[in-house]
Length: 611
Ligand SMILES: Nc1ncnc2c1ncn2[C@@H]1O[C@H](COP(=O)(O)OP(=O)(O)OP(=O)(O)O)[C@@H](O)[C@H]1O
Image (cartoon, rainbow, N blue to C red; front, side):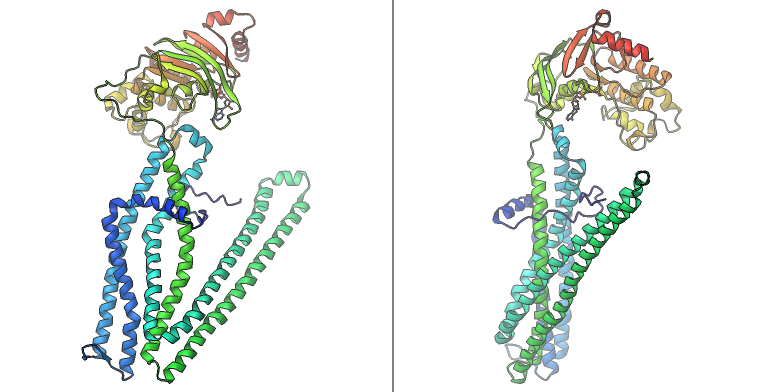
């Protein structure tokens, strides 16, 4: 299978985070993510100071080593005030430098880790809070895999930046600048010579290295293609044999293998070139510098100690030039990641949890519902009208049923009541008030739903029932379970309410899951109820229990039932027959079943014949 580049596990980072071109604008955008660091700016500043100190101590090291070498060669280290520093004292000084360096590094890691961990927690928390408040269409336009990779790999990328990349960047730049100043102090002639030879070679090596990475990726891609052939054909081996295509597939596989070899050879040609370039170029450069240095030393223009310091600084500078190249790529990825995160954070949320005006009482809902000329298309398919001119009304406490063929638009009608989507036309009123004027959280808290497929969360039965009202007491939960005919089976489990239901509730039967869902709705005690009948048939005993529970649930509530089995809706106040997104018939069961050519009468006959 081709690599999707999407990481949903969170275990490893996605290496394919798109890189962002480093422009002023992308930088400005990316830096906005720093507002999440602001609460920890004190710690961040301490980390920065420690980082500067630890980098400074590192830079002292070659200089002191040079002094030590010179002292060994009979050229003592004299302080500006004239006193001579002994070899022992210099060695002690070196120890002190290293000790400080160790302490500063510890502190730097400790402070930066705290900043990055807390910052990343805050970003993840903000992202999650944003995700759950985004409107439903967002989740239809974006794959869940892609969304979770925002919260795992993109945030991981940022975490890397705060803990490592930033510190690295600072240190490399400092090494480069201070290193160059130091070597200039040691010997201007040699420094200029070195700077003209060494860095260009390092830069060339980096460009070379990038080219090799691209080629290596191409080889991987070719290899992935050959694997696709193997997987596909072995999985569909019956088809291959039935069509006698064994030879054809073998040939196809061979061609693909040959392509892989070609790509691999090309990449390795460059790799070989790279290795010899590094050997000849880099070491050649070192030889050149050494030759120059040796000439200077023999002419008495430089001491052995200076040469040692110089060589060490040169290595530092070379490493930091190389390191900066890598960092450049990382910074690009970080900017890409932070831009994607900020994009999500900038998405408009649903208008939920709006603060109530001072002095207004909590919302109470009677349950009158009025659909007026409602038209609708899904945002993902704007050209396809799913509902057209839907008008009906329900008095508080009435029960209505929606029936009609699959895909007619029944579920869509009730989803609009919850305001999962915006209408394309018309209005929906609850208690005579446009639903758009309600706070979504308040409104939804008065609507209960028992869906077709009950989704239970992986915890206990208690937690799943209490999902209807998280602050419910045990007694309320038990009462709800009894009313929902769920207590019969719950009480037979040794762990009762604490029985774990397994991921998505797989440890419960379909009928049991439905009764848990009904108990959930009973506990929520909503004024308006939506029942989406399960299409999958239950055995007749289970069916009876579920039906009994539903009847209990519907008492004294405005109920909308999406019915698949017409036998269950004889008693409702009104039946709406939906077809092609329109109401094509409406009336009571008796009225509709007596109309000769009516669709409902036909459906009824059909179901009767089937059973
Ligand atoms: N999220 C969605 N995005 C785009 N189109 C959708 C979406 N959900 C449903 N549809 C389309 O809207 C139409 C109505 O679907 P709806 O689910 O309301 O039908 P239904 O009458 O409830 O069907 P069923 O009885 O099979 O559940 C169908 O054509 C369906 O393909």
